[in-house]
Length: 151
Image 1: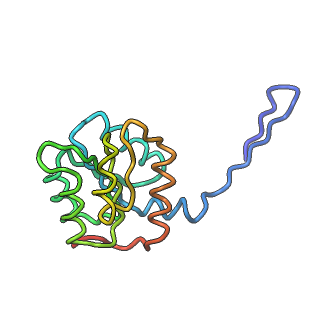
Image 2: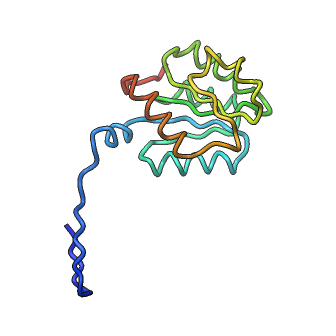
């Protein structure tokens, strides 16, 4: 509890412990894959500020290495990357673990049809709202228990 008596009016602030869903988020590890460093860093900051543990990879191939070697609960990746596109990465991840949530970001709307059935969610890059990404990720994780995804 915090009490501020510095002015005529009193201000009382009460700090409440995080809800269970917030605490569960801290146990979730999200792998972000994007060959654009600025976008990768921005997503990492957004996810970490929401309590997620974030692993990053600057290429599809490196993302697959990280996915194979770490316990990953969800994947957020860009569609257009130099070495592998997002659909190739998503297909490889699905072979290893068909239940891990995958969110693909792309600047091209026509890729939506291609990603159906492989990605759990497609978000138009450039229009991505950090709050939408967070709420979507939370919803996807809520429907799947936080358990080791390591293969």
